Image (cartoon, rainbow, N blue to C red; front, side, top):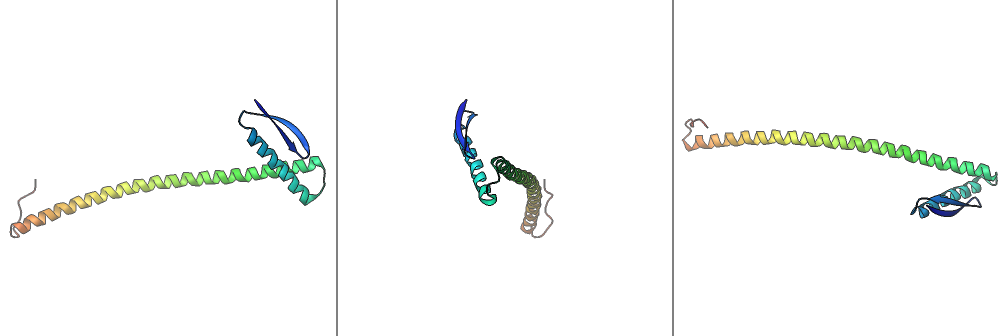
Length: 127
């Protein structure tokens, strides 16, 4: 297990994390620290504990909004995949109909061609 030393709101903390996650934990600490600094600029000195709680709530709200957006996008993606599958099925059915229509047209053209070759007389039945 790895350890990272981070500073948040002027206090230093030694945090444990999984090996390889040190940089990520450091970035998260910087995100919290920056949020605290931003709130201090807007609200002034309202106490360390209060500003830290406000930062935590603000970041939790950001995470909640991002989660809702992600869920909406996942639902939209699922709908798009369903629509794509339905479109592929419709395309396959249309290709079948078109193939049958072309086959029927080919048969008619061949029949007309035989009729014309026999001087318009009725052509022998097709096998």
